[in-house]
Amino acid sequence: MKYPGIKRAALEIAYDNGGINRMRSEKTMLGELARFLERQPEEILPAIDAWLSALSGDDLQTVCAGEHYEMEALLKDAPPFTDRLLNDYFDEVC
Image (tube, rainbow, N blue to C red; front, side, top):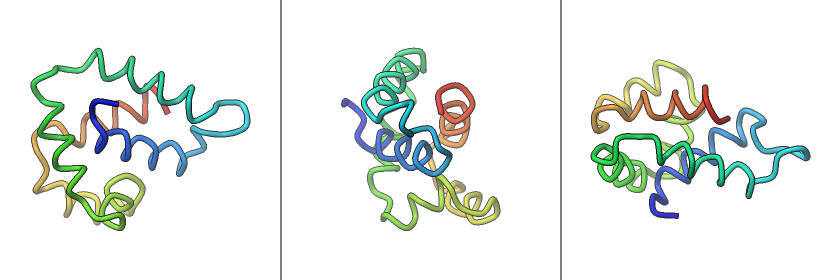
């Protein structure tokens, strides 16, 4: 996948919220993620991907599935539209 940081985050969100289960495989979810990313503005994805890729495992888990105030604290340093991309992924794909 072209955006490994975004993939990591999407997998974290999907596993945390039951988006991957016996009825929906990881492979299926990744195909849906690819189609979702094709609809996003290309210019925002590289910076978001780089930022997510640089997060530690704990910080990534917090950004994707942590308490709201902890998410906000980490996301204040994120590129523009990171929070929106992750929320849109949750709402539309997960």
